[in-house]
Amino acid sequence: MKGDPSQFNVYEIAAKFLKIILSFTSLYLLASIAWQFLISEDADGILPIAENIAGTKLEQDVLVLIYDPRISSQGNAKLTVSKQWNDPYELVDDYVEWVGVASRELLTYNVTDIVEVNDAFIPKADGFRYSDIAYINCINDLPSHTSCYSPDAADYPWILNRHAICEEVNSGKIDEVWIFGGPWFGLHSSVLYGPEGFPLASDHIISDECEKTIPVMGFNYELGLDYMITNFGHRVQETMREVYNGGEQNSLATNWDKFWMNSFESASFDYSGCGTVDFPPNASQRGDYSNQTRKQSYCNNFADYPNVSTSKTSLDPVDCSLWGCSKNGYLTWWFNRIPYFEGTGLDEIFNNWWYYIGDPNIVLTNTLPVVGIEETTNKETLPSSTGSSLELLQTDTGETIPEVSHITDTGATLEHLPIRSDQELVLSEENFITCYKENATICDLDEDGVVNIIDFKLFTKSMSQAAL
Image (cartoon, rainbow, N blue to C red; front, top):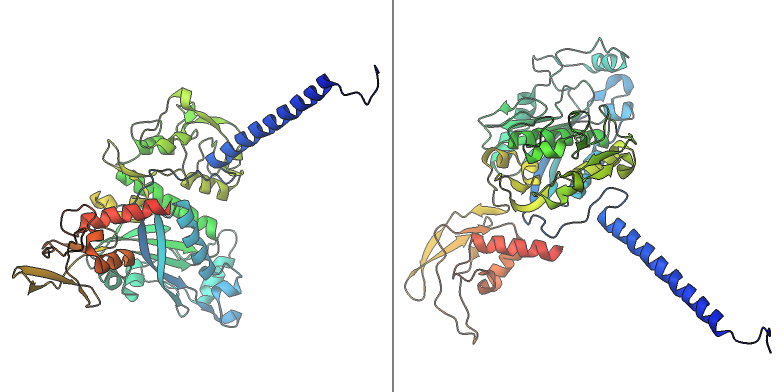
């Protein structure tokens, strides 16, 4: 009967079904867009890891020195406790974790030892040293601090000689030193110490006793992690200036010039790069981390490094919403855009800038050390079963490495092949040593009849790719 609500209306059913389909389609499209946004850049400014991430990773061994003198007027409590400042041990852990995340584990720190000094203030370069009473008067003398001693610079040779730093460096135990102290301790935020160097926050301190150059970081436990990261950022900038022989404002001449360009320091351009630690790409002044003014930027094009397009058709808007309008958010955003790729560009600079950041000796030579590789010594020549000489290697523990042999598909052992006289073998990579000992054939990845440094490089590269 016409008008009977129980009567099926084919057209109404079809219309409702189509409406449902369209609704699900819309939801799917919205979800896809949201997912693409999340995997391209999340709210913390973290970009996804590229497929061509550098295969070689730096692990630097660090000695930490904490100068935390006891204050007699405060019941002999340590300075950090009496002033309720940050716990330096927690700062160490937080900083190590932060650098690992920021560098995508391309630069990691291994703290080998923490030495706490409670019986002395660090002397100044001219020999002056605070008593605990004089120091407390200094930091309480607000706002001018006129009672604080000047010149403020600490006596670095005194610190480093007291802790036998060059002995530690020359024995291969450490690659870097972190010194913690309070305000007015005269510590540089970063400085290089060794036979060669270049300026960081201060001029290079020459020491012919050290066989290589090491970074020495100065951290103020009153201020906390964000200032430690800022110190590290300034070290990054000075390091890359050295790599590229400077840095010019209003210039696109080098990849470093492109990277650090910002609207405040390069006002001749109406677009920006990635900025600096102190000047975001859209900054109108130093420390302008909460600026909501939009600026066009090619910073995202560093994901294609070293092919960084600065074409106006490839620009994206940038403002503080990308990093949460905070200093810590910006620093994470900024560090995450430092190039970290394999190979070298046309400028013959490594596409992974973390090499230079982590090890100043790479800056000085533009040559990668073989990470984890040591030149073998203590070689011993023994006769083989065929009468030819067979070189055996000994590890640092004195254990003899077995000879290289090739095994055919049928299991027949071919004549032992001698290891080259220039053989270098990684002694700290457990997996490679295990491979070498249990079946040397597997380790001969380039199948040239010899297990050597080339095989190790192929091995570590495959391990890095597998980890991704």
